[in-house]
Each structure stands twice: as structure tokens, then as C-alpha cells.
Length: 73
Image (cartoon, rainbow, N blue to C red; front, top):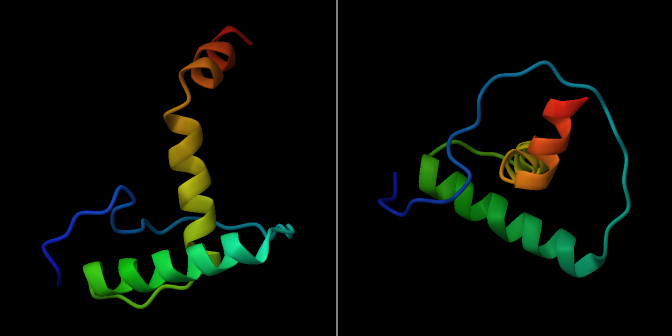
């Protein structure tokens, strides 16, 4: 395991639903690079598709406006 800390930590076990989306080739390449670095850092093989939901969840959790508006609903 590396001593480097990534913003996205080890992945929790969750129930999953399948979604499909389209992204630019450059984003796919970045996601694949991130997945490789994540695998190296935490010693567990993970692919970009596995990381995407966790990245989106972390992004939404840090969006103050989204959190604030979600609480008023």
C-alpha cells in the first residue's frame, strides 16, 4: 500500500443499480488513470466504472447548495 492519500478513500460495499452515460474520451482516460492510482494506493484492483458512483457521491456530499436545498424539501 502506498502512503499517498487520495480524496476518494477505500470503497465501501453498497447495493448497486446500473446506469449508462456518455463522456468524452479524455474523461474516460482520466478515470482509468485514477482507477490505476487508486488500485496502487489501496492494494485492491478497481476499475473506473466502480469508482464513478463513489466519485459522484463524494462530489454531491461536498456541494453546499445541493445539501442545503435537499434539506428544505
